[in-house]
Picture: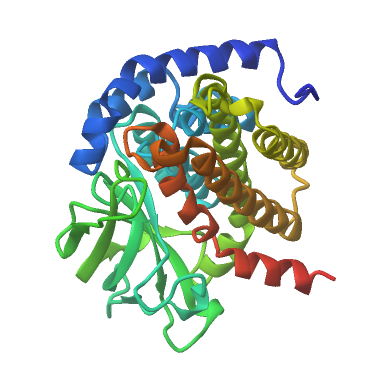
Length: 381
């Protein structure tokens, strides 16, 4: 086996603590959360107390100042355990970094400590009913009033992770509707404000415990000082700058999920008998398991190298796109093969592989569809 040199003994100890926490505080309740359509707020608060939320945030903003490897460990352990309802990754490693990287000092001081403790739960609202991967096609508007002291936000969003639980949403909107990318801005919007409405919790094929919602804005008054960035029109460029990190996160979770599925399947084919012998005794099973092991190992090496590049601030847009496309395609392939090797039991919801198979499919869609990833790579030639 190829050792993972990106992590050290301290991170191995941290991984153990995260794994134990998830086994005790999340795994026993995840089935109920699937029925509820969301995880409990209590889990968020407990995670905040232990420093599992926003670990990379500087101490002055409520974090512990850890490097991104600590976030990677949390992502991998949540994914490995099949706890797809837990939306910490988006909260800690997408929403919080936008505020840290582009927010005013006042915004950082006010929001980041609340995100780190779990007092506030964060979301980001990009996708619209008529605009998915095409961020330039956003129709939601945020136009300043005559006095210039606030924006008036109107529009709708869909497929928003953490949408039901969110207290704070970074909203992608057109502050200059006449412009394309140059007219796009990001706004910090609190869900308690008048005119902000949460729609239904969407009934998805997988990720049943993840609250994924429609959001509606009807003349929401957003104070002018809630603009993210020094001036209007910076939103599209802020999004482009942060997307490589988001795609790395998808890759990390994809490989961890594939590794877990392979391990579950190995245990199953060793125990399950067919025609009087264990399923692993058949050459087809052994060859399928060997093929998947080789592909997962290669993906793990690629993913770890991208993690190293991100730590060095050298992960570029095409490489992140290749990682996202390759690892999520592989994740779906592995899940399908593992379901097949489980036979009829692989299609039963009580088996982890069935849930993982259903959960995996969306990975090829969000953070930019894999077709968009290929286009990004092709444009870099």
